[in-house]
Length: 56
Image (cartoon, rainbow, N blue to C red; front, top):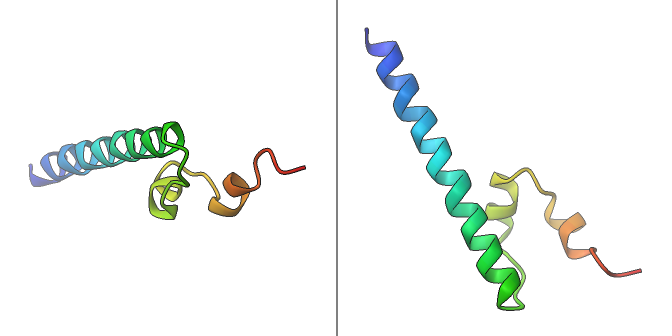
């Protein structure tokens, strides 16, 4: 019985982490700052690729 409970809390933790990172990245971009690499990584975005956006 403990496995489903752990699974629920692990999923909830991941959900909170992803949405927290999305909010942090969004706020940084709106403020004209570079988001932290850990937040980009949580969203599956390569930090180097993100920094190169618009630089052609």
